[in-house]
Length: 319
Image 1: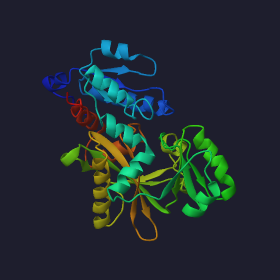
Image 2: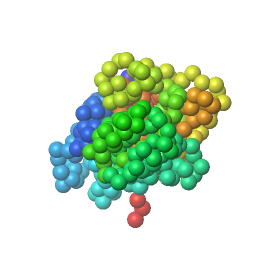
Image 3: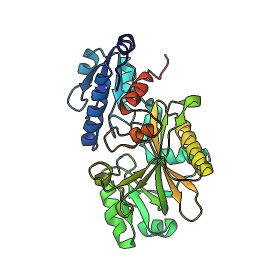
Image 4: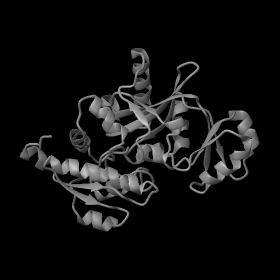
């Protein structure tokens, strides 16, 4: 690990690493932020921790950061709300802007945009308290997936294999969100595609295949066990690798994402057709996280990845 030369390190100015926050993913964000902060400090960058879950926007403004690295996940950090505040404060920030962050955090709106662009994503229904769950199960088939559309890290997600379990799954998701998403279950292999850059410069990193115990890639298996296996680069035919990377980058660009992100993809077993699941506009940066894993497969160290992302920090709204 090498530090940047003094002039390059100083060119970033005073950097805030924003982590913690108020979402259900606070614990993971703390791990991501601690990693990013240590990486930037190891490169000689004047980096400082800042937790928006415990400190106010007035305090953020008073810090006079020249730019910030957003290592927040979920609501109030990944959903466009913080991005809007940073635009108003005039503080350049990493990752996607207000609109792309907001849309990317909303799985329903993401699907609408992707389908309008002709991109493949599993069939779905939006549910509320008056919805006919039996009719939904008949339409989408069983098993199906029930999830809160504004949460990440698989929080509140249930696989429903029997009609009698649908109501309980709905209740779990509805406790976390005003609307609930029921989604067709696609049987097949699970992958994720990390992306760096934006617009014409957006590029996919090597694909990661996720092999979770009994196919259950839940919160515990994502972050706190070593039972989940990862294969990077994923073992796929070259043409299929290129196609999955292509649709992932197109999905990312269609939402207007930039800086960095991660697109989750399912490969249907019966015909090897890829389906887009969701986009993460502020992905995890923990020891188990997939963007650093994909970067390592391309020869980019964790520390260099953090610096590369930090270089992209900017204000997105032009006044």
